[in-house]
Image (cartoon, rainbow, N blue to C red; front, side, top):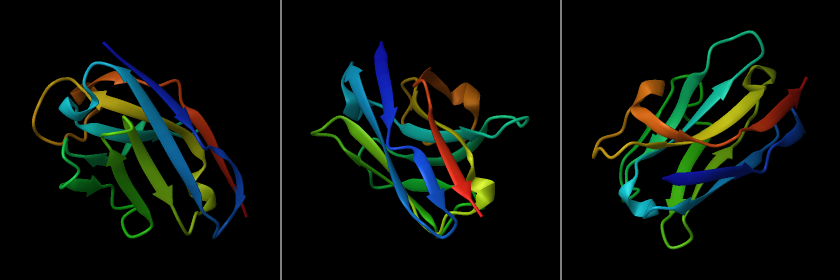
Length: 125
């Protein structure tokens, strides 16, 4: 069992930045591929970014590539999402997720077995 708690969301103007954090507890954090997903009102949850267990491999949705950076600190059991050049369309609840034991990065919601409660990000125009 892995428990995930997100923080760092808030209200920011377009063009601004936020850094989300996700603290994990329970099982060995470094054993899990980690991902970030988001869900905007009235829309389905979608993949944002993922990072391998060591942090050496990352993957991004096209909509955030070049603006968002995912990273992790296995010593602190934490994964981060640095979000720059934010746009109003980035407004959503952002969720941290841990992939059920598997060595590779995944983009599907079903790839991830553990989820945080989410943190709201609102970007004003």
